[in-house]
Image 1 (cartoon, rainbow, N blue to C red):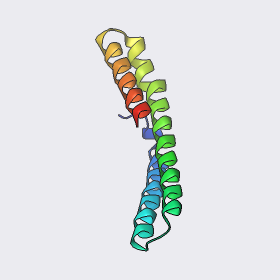
Image 2: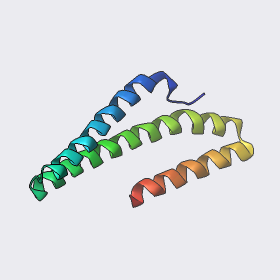
Image 3: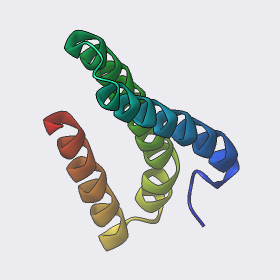
Amino acid sequence: MASYSGEKDAYLKRLRRIEGQVRGLQRMVEEDKYCIDILTQVSAATKALQSFSLELLDEHLATCVVHAAQAGGAEAEEKVREASDAIARLVRS
């Protein structure tokens, strides 16, 4: 079971909102809106995705990684490596 299962509805609601922002960007391009206005909306959608990512990462660290660390061994090492890789991907994006 995923660590975010208890918050699944809230996560889905946020993702639907972000999806709406992206659809809004498509409409803006179709309607030939001013470039700076589109870039402003791109920034807002990017921030929303970053915020979502950080919250999901926090949930992962607080549950999956902590439980694996308590168990120890190879599973703990793998979960820490996965979290580290995920953080690196977020930093690069």
